[in-house]
Amino acid sequence: MVREVPSFLLLFFLIFPLFSPVSADQIKQKNNPDEMSQQTGFALTLTLYQNGALFHHIGSFSFKQGYNLVSFNDVCPELIPGSIFVESKDARIISYSYKKKSLTVSRLLKAFLNKDVFVKPQGKCCAKGSFETVKLVAYQGDNALVMKDNKILQVDSSRIVFPYLPSGLKTPAKIDIQLDAQKGDSSLGLLYLSNKLRWKADYTGMLSRDERSIKVESFALLKNDSTASIKNARLRLVAGDVNLYQRSNFPETRLYRAKALSIAERPKRQELFEYHLYDMPERVSLLPGQRKHVLLFDAEVFPCTKRLVLSSNRYVYYRSENRDMNRLHPTVLLEIETSKKEKKEPFPAGMFRVYKKDAGNQSIFVGEYQIPSVASGNKIVLALGKAFDITASRRQTAFKRLKNVGQNNYIYESSYEIRVHNSKSKVQQVLVREEIPGDWKVIDENVPHQKEDARHCSWLLEVPAESTKILRYSVKVMD
Image (tube, rainbow, N blue to C red; front, side, top):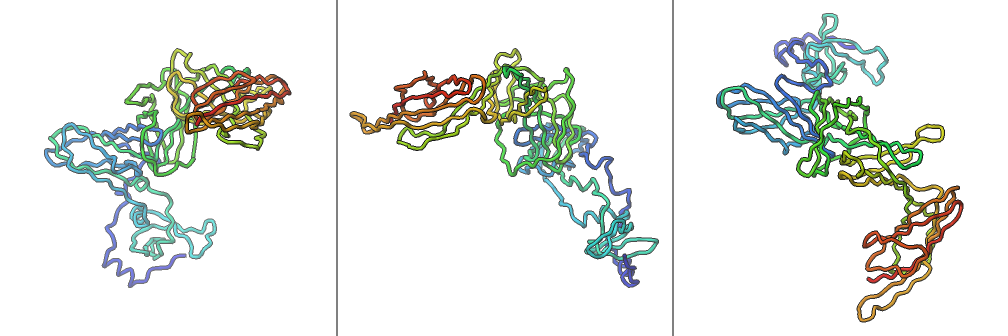
């Protein structure tokens, strides 16, 4: 499997040493290779935004008079170097530098000097159990010397298999700070940003049988897409649209939900600048690639209303059109009223998923919607899908273009017919909403309209069971 080293080559290694021997005790090992090192006197506060993260390390140091060099080890390798900020009350910062070492074969060989490694057999196929256990004693370039049965053997370094990744090589990033300080004990703060960590709100709602109320649970989903391991950090969440340049998307990886907190351990919210800041009661640990849910606020029951809204998105009020638009399906909107609750809470942006019990008391999924940030007391509107048993068609029945007297523009008169069919066994209400451009006025209709704003007009139709309701209206538009 491996061949013995020729005597002349062994003599070469002995005369010209390739390295300074390093004992196993000299290679620092961590108790848990998946956790970020927490040095004595160091603390970490992790503030997650919905598009990034702020790391705040605080270190305690015993400074000497004058020039000092201190290091913050195990910083996030994916930090944004230009965002580094050093806080100090008693020292003057001279310079700081960020160092990140990439993982190389040479660094691995150095870490495993005088340690056991595996040597795989030559050839493309490696049968199970065919690896040999040897001790690495020297290396140079592509050649390595290993010891087996008290014999020194030479192997190609590409055949060496390392049994594990030393924890010291997992987060090879640090920040060195040069400063001028007074003698004594003091603290130093280090802040920097990373766009490889973030959070978002996840809402789940259980709709009541009569669809008039919904029980809402809110959790914060923490995402760590960096290679950093976060251990026992104070956690803060910021809700709001904070500008932070994003370099890449966040892949979905491992996910689990943390246990619910007790009643006395709810997050504390405060308004900060133009955002909302949540101080989480428990410290957090995050492994690389991990997703974790933590409770954002207690489950609450809110009144809600289901609406079927038909919007054609075909604005032809300036021209004639002969085509019919058939098989339109209304959008199912769920409007959640939050203003009647005594404790009004904002709803940070996130995914809102809705469930409902069926006749057999089994929960089924009825839709999801990505909501923007909703201020306290405002209505939450969810577009959950399309109504299956309600169909509609829309067609233009008349069109005129008239010269506006005394003006250099035209007046357009359009007439429309919208037929809404209800295949259900119960009466259904369908809201027909049209967007009308320009200066407009409804001049004829068979159902009263509601002017919602300058561009939207709506009609509420009561559609009988297994029947069709026809809406006819005419609009005058000036360009």
